[in-house]
Length: 154
Image 1: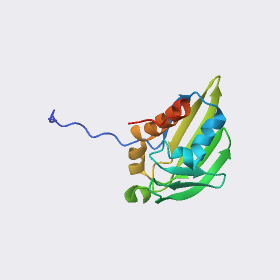
Image 2: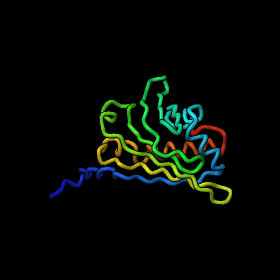
Image 3: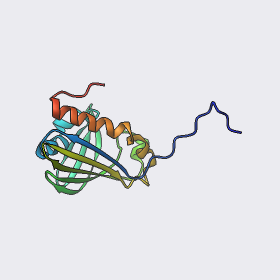
Image 4: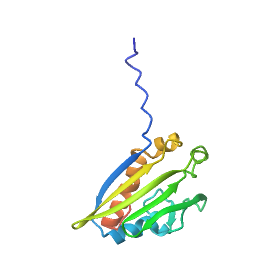
């Protein structure tokens, strides 16, 4: 018999995670917000993410090096694909790199931003860390900043 006071363990995070958000901004503004380190520092947990056609470089809020990884696709302002390593944490950084795809699609006066974080089979701790609130906080912060000019306060 199961103890009714004990909750079941949460299932493992999926190896492919997909997030959607509508943003009242141009594709160019969203692209700039994703690739410009001055902008990302205002919504991406303080991280300065600089993404070019060659690489994705991440620096922590105190200037610590969070790693550089290759950019796989760079099609401004529509599609960006880069590898991802969670180098901000030693345990997560030891896992295999995964992949993040950003797709920006105009929908009238707004854009649909879809973020797919996949290839997480070799990074189960990273998958668990970024699911739910991890990516949702980043995307909510991006949307709020672009639409209001002010960062999301939590």
